[in-house]
View 1 (cartoon, rainbow, N blue to C red):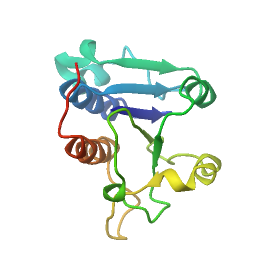
View 2: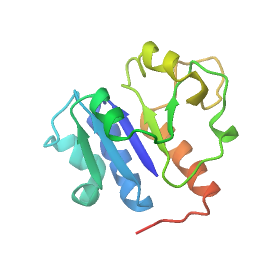
View 3: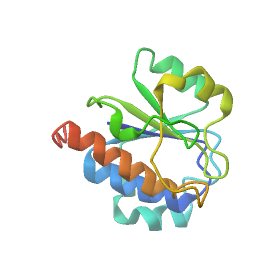
Length: 152
């Protein structure tokens, strides 16, 4: 599996997702610009002693990421769709993209990929769940569907 963070802003979230990625053998993709330095102590603190083990790919832009992953199945996590993540039949090499914490994936990207947008159901009380929690929820559903096949 692949988790993609488009312009992440909060190092603690990225560190937590990195730790989850290591322990599930999931590749983590970060698309610049980042809202923090990869050398930040908060990032490494959240990732604990796992950060150096993260299978990490850094992309200069969304366009570079898309160009390099032509033909890949990419799902876009958003609150702006009705299609639940649990309705998707995930495959082992799928990508799940999450947008920046303060604003989510840009509308133009979502509009261009409406059939691939997924959401986590929740009550209408808040804007969204925490990024690292959302990534874990969707990742573990995808892993459950693929029989927790942690490819090495």
